[in-house]
Amino acid sequence: MTKKKFMTLMMLIALVAVTLTACGGGGNKKEEPANNATKTEENAKTEEASAEMTAEGLMETKGGFMSVATGGTGGTYYPLGGALSNILNNAGVNYTATAQATGASKENVELVTKGDAEIAFIQNDVAYYAANGTDTFEGQKKPSLRGLCCLYPEIVQIVASDESGIKTIDDLKGKRVAVGAPGSGVEVNVKQILDIHGITYDDLGKVDYLSFAEAADQIKSGQIDATFLTAAIPSSAITELATTHDVHLVPIAEDKAEALIAKYPFYVNLHITPTEYKGQDQEISVVAVQSMLAVDEKMAEEDAYNIVKLLFENLDTMKESHARGGDIALDKALDGMSIEVHPGAQKYFDEVKK
Image (cartoon, rainbow, N blue to C red; front, side, top):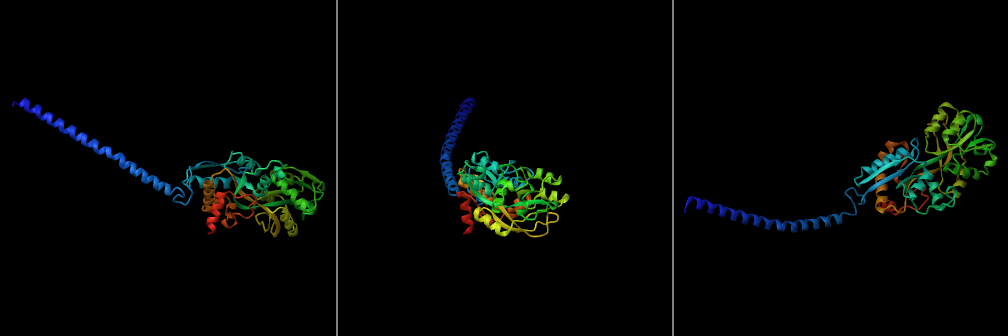
């Protein structure tokens, strides 16, 4: 055999060997999809078994955008809404939450029931009116509104100038009084409190529909004698007013507070010593409504559950955002709840009771 023929033969043998090896490799690869399919089935079973709860004990959801309707940027709701948004964003449940500045309670009811916001900060009295179609929501019933939890008391504060001589609610007769914006939650509080005392607007010397900032300016200028504000204590607006002018809080007698609560059960009676206000060093009897979180009934049970669970497991974050965050407590979460609780939130409260 010549050298040339020998080299040709060797090349043919090598080519056949490579071809057989390639075919053998292809045969091994044909088995891999079966192995992968088995692994995929096993993973699916594992994921299905753990779909109910995540590692953190949260209910598994697809996540999504969460708009948190709060209030004005200078109020209490806004920083607390920002803190809640941060908690949701860092929860590992694929939420994208953001705090939305709004006109507060009444507007927030509209936003959440129309689907323009997912979570809303609302006063429990306003929530009650909305759910029942009364007072500020006369003829505009919002039956889909649901509660998540109550947060902290918002005290009806009646601020009077010292020179007005107003010491009691009865002393408001014949005086110039600011009652909040027309139809606002504050104005409804005013009417209810006056009514328990047998007083109407006609008994007042002058009724002004003013925001608290406007009312504070008019107290400073001597144009009004007193004003109402429903807010947590201390209110920075009152603190500021008290630093430059002699003002005080007007109490609500306990028997009148009891009569008010009997008629409107969303109120509570408290005794406070707001030492943050200059010159206010005596304990007085007041009434308060509760701030709360509300959603629409369409919210998924998993989301409602996660929101309340994350909130109450991260109270330090709420407290760091605003002093009132320190008043939020799990054992008071349903105190003053004025509307039906969302099933997801109720599931969480039932669990923690066990």
